[in-house]
Amino acid sequence: MERTVQAIYYDGATSKPQEATVRVREMNTLEVELPDGGCFQWPLEHKGMEWERSSAMLRLSFGDHPRRVLLIRDEPFIQSFVLRMRYAGRQGVYDRALAVARSGPVLFFLGVVALLICSYLWFLPWAAERLALLVPRTLDERIGEAAFDQMALGLPIDSARTVSLQAFGDAMELSPSFEPTYHVVKDDQVNAFALPGGHIVVFTGILDRMASADELAALLAHEATHVEERHSTRMLARSMAGYLFLSLLIGDVNAVVAMVADNANALRNLGYGRGLETEADRIGQEQLLKNGVDPMAMVGLLELLEREAEDMPEALAFLSSHPLTQERIAAARTRARELGTPQAPNDRLEVLFRPLIAAQPTEAMPSSAN
Picture 1 (cartoon, one colour):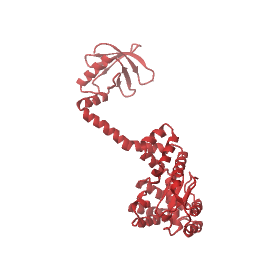
Picture 2: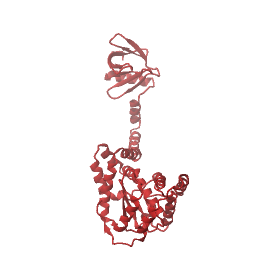
Picture 3: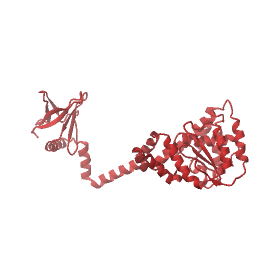
Picture 4: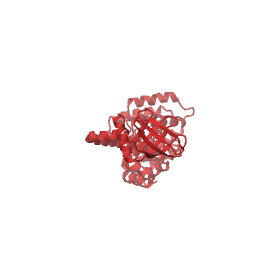
């Protein structure tokens, strides 16, 4: 250990490396000599001296401001230094991990596996959702178009009521970043869903149970908020985190779109958490007020859905993918009171609502791609 070795020294004040000569004295002191004749010593047992090593390099640091660093690549020196520090009771992270692995290889292996599983189950979905928010909104449109084109082949579209619903939705501005396209599907399901990018599908089962234009406005505002806030895209990223994360990370958008097209029903049946549902209610109520509709309409819609869910099989109900709680209804009622009523009601909506409830059932036909 008394022999001299060469090292790279950083003085902490500049990024310029300097060659240095290093040796360890008998008094547990590291002596460093610089080419300009400068010489200093670092006590190895000093709390301010820290060290870490990999299999090929030893990194020593000392001091606060500036913090000086030495890099040593001499393998015999590194081994001797590690032994000396081990006897002194000071191990680096690398050596502590190595010691754990050697003392209990099975436990160490299980710990690594558990860490990888936790990362896959929790961190990766979280990271994929955040990454999805960074990609352009045009990706939402491409995903939504691909998914709708695939599922529309099996959806019995009510063409007449679809035209009326589009006129109703166009009378409001619910999603500033997208242009919602509305569809009425002839089906007894008390349900509706939104795809990324703006396709909003409403089943006749829920439409026929509505008694006012305000309830329909609340439903569209809720679904349009899912679109605007990219809830479907985020949930899709979480549910297919591994594949989507890698695809988005390398910018392979075509692979994402193709995968969604092959699994279109994953978007149709995608469930939202209570947090996103409450957000869709809250922002939807704000949009209602801006469009001349009483925000209390959202409360009426939620109460309607709660009543209908009692007689509807769970798989066919709106609440199967839009979880409802009493807390959510209470929050919507509180928010409605805070927002108040619109100064100028949107009377046009009631006029546009009449054809939707008066329309006679038409022959169902598959939709064409929009």
